[in-house]
Length: 333
Image 1: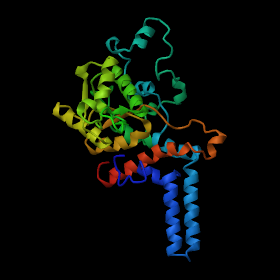
Image 2 (image 1 turned 60 degrees about the vertical axis):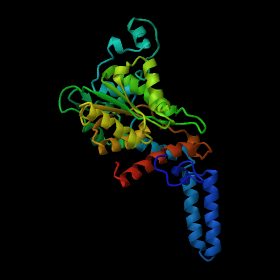
Image 3 (image 1 turned 30 degrees about the horizontal axis):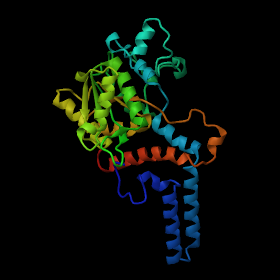
Image 4 (image 1 turned 120 degrees about the vertical axis):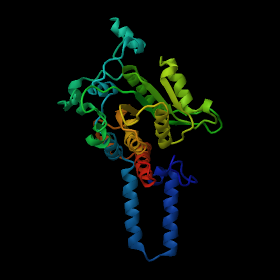
């Protein structure tokens, strides 16, 4: 984790709050030592123990965790619908994927990616010029945060699409590897680029050398998916979200671009609030596009009961919450 303090018992600071073996042992040791040093503080120990038990219970319950995830992510929107809401035209023929070309030729290629959800599900549109604000990605439901970068009039003409990475390097290997979130972000970033054009910024280091970095792996995949090398820019030495986005801002300025205008930020919905805060701190005013959502649409009865798998969902949510607070304390958000 990029804001680590110590990792003796934990793989991530968020795990300190989760009912995982190391955390449970640590809590048990604290209460044992507390009882030995202050044996008469029974009521205080009982109250503290009850609070810890309630916290661990809540963070083992999928439906409770989902409340935090939904607050961070905002309403669910497919990438295609977000682009439609922004008034972005379909991809030109030279940037279309194979499935899009087959569909355009009248062949059955199935539903095209994320664009198959009916617009009627989005409710009544909230228009700003030719832009449907109600169809945009809105982390934490903050309309002001996601609309201030929109043009005052006329269509949006993006010049850059920036995609932060997600992944790590294996313990004994050189090559960094994208995780599932990183792969979804990349696929969404390329989908966006096909429709908008401009430059595609791929960020992420972690590997033992630039040729083994996450951004290098992302670049290879983008080339395989038809993005020309001339349209790709990489940030290969970054290890955190702040370094990813700050590196993209630096390259934009070096190439004479204005990072405060017509930039699209593509990342996971859960990661978007932190990414937006970082972007604003380094002078980028992006329009957010969320690539994938973790929230449950309609929690069922069993999700209100705790289970052993739920803490891993809570880990991702707490990682983002702690990350936002940590960056704000350091003046990076």
